[in-house]
Image (cartoon, rainbow, N blue to C red; front, side, top):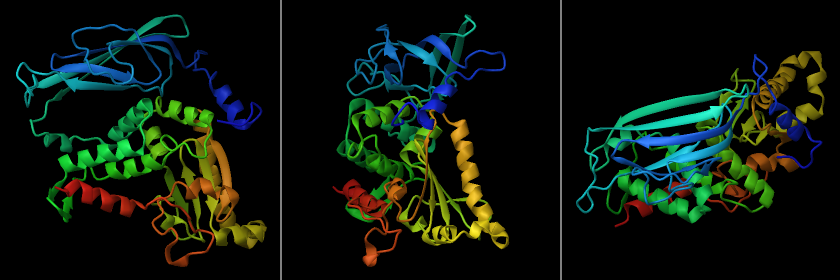
Length: 383
């Protein structure tokens, strides 16, 4: 996303569209058709991504539609190696009320058939088949196989496609933790969430604050761009969009260390590299920026400081080279005008606390993750 066609972000992204493989072909498949097939216990609710329905109904198509629903076949204009599609299914109902044809321990399967045209003109078919056991009726077995990162991305795609807001995310999260957490009624101190589920509320906290649901301060074009990208990217990239990655560079700890996306990580004597997929930001603490302004990096006796400055720049360059679309590169410091790209993403655990007035202060009306979790637990255990 750039302001003009002359900016590096656009020019590099446009150039990468025409990158070729070793044989000289574009690394893209065209005019693709996807078909989902299932065992009798499953029905297809729909798919979310860069595709359109072919309105092909079969007995395994559910009445409830999600995204492009009411079909088992879809068409995709083009595919690349990073294109992903989210499919949604439901358990087929049984003959009795509230019954299901799926029984615990029984195997169910899904098969995806993808047909596309290679740039050479050849038609190719790729088939992927997966099989899983159905869980017991109380769904407790689901916890052990729960992929919280994939679940967070699917939730984000569903919310974006439906145009949902923060309130929908809150209601969904309360229902989920009420069902799967261990607790005593009306006793928040007894609340326990399994490790397989523990990060999911944190992902939802950051999703609530993201540009996918928050449109304040972004143009309609920017909002559409952000939402379009999360509908096609893989799980790893989508998680970075929801909860940005933060690396710390300092004199004391050698290689860069991942740190919490929190205001407590904004220290004066370190450099941070934040990656939210759309932006790559290098943030310098007050002390680091003061040394930089004094020109210490140009003195031979401070070669270690010069190396500290170069390390995040090299890592940022690698991210910019590998990613499509190319993210916007920003270099800033504590108190700088563009420090907002970092401060708007971090958890404001110490925002406005104790009359904090230094350059690392985060002034916001957003609740902290701790306050969010406390309120969530109270509502989940409430009778």
